[in-house]
Image 1: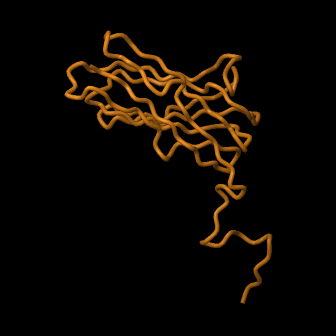
Image 2: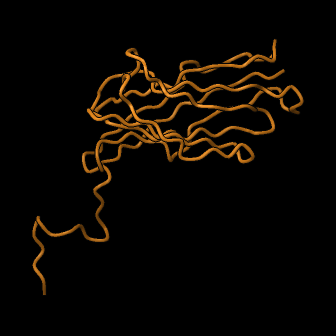
Image 3: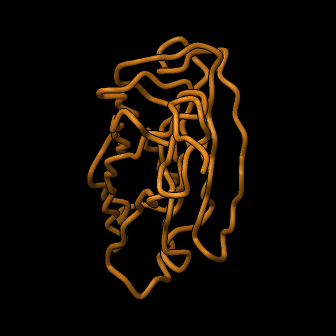
Length: 163
């Protein structure tokens, strides 16, 4: 029978994804937007609060109703005012307008902590929608990370008035 020591690989019941129980928060810069008065593009920032963690990246999955929201795009924040700064790397992991999902990965070479903008969400509302309002949310796949350690995110949402 093999000995179990601290240098052995993790057993099937253990995980190294978040051994420290740290977490982050993802929110929109606004909780409510009244987009009923015009058909212009709406922009809202995505804010990452690293809370108890230092992060060198985040995965953001936005979920929306494609019958109420269109022309969705995520623009990463590359300026000096953003959390990850000018040197961040961005990967669009997937965008499925028909399903109403957009996944973006953002990373940087140095760990960061604090609260700041990591991207801007851009969209239009569809006035032909049968709904008066809709929500845009982050999926539970959204997270912060540092190397291979992943931190689950407390997730905010955005209510959008359409009509």
